[in-house]
Image 1 (spheres, one colour):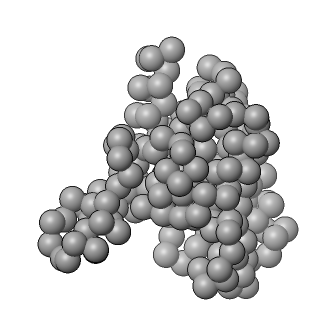
Image 2 (tube, one colour):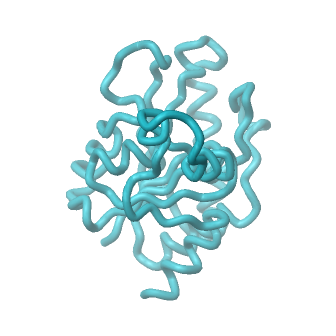
Length: 192
């Protein structure tokens, strides 16, 4: 059974520079909930892999984060699918933890939990760190143009700057690009 490792903010729901701090602020991107449900119905396991530094910053509590994720679960269930697991990093960017993307730990945890090899998984994100974390775990990466995706794509294609900057911003090899999660789901469902 294939595994989709999906970033949350900017892929499933509208992102915010002020963080998603309550269930009311969790607003799905058009078509994303249905895409997850369709993939789930087609036999894909769905895992959300997300950095949630708002916890470390004190912007919301763990119980609030659980309520946000409960809303996500309910929306996907109402559409006829399910989220199999959510893996999150609660640390801030300077914590030096192993679980924060672009590190591979969350992806590795998901692969281990579902007993899936990296070649049977696909990761989707809107930021370079999502794609780098997936690639470091050996998982094929997909960039969506929602959330930060257009900016991520533009930065990766910008030839200006020194060589080290260009290499740091480069998308992992063989990264595929889709308009949104719904377009990715359509493509995956057509192949099966």
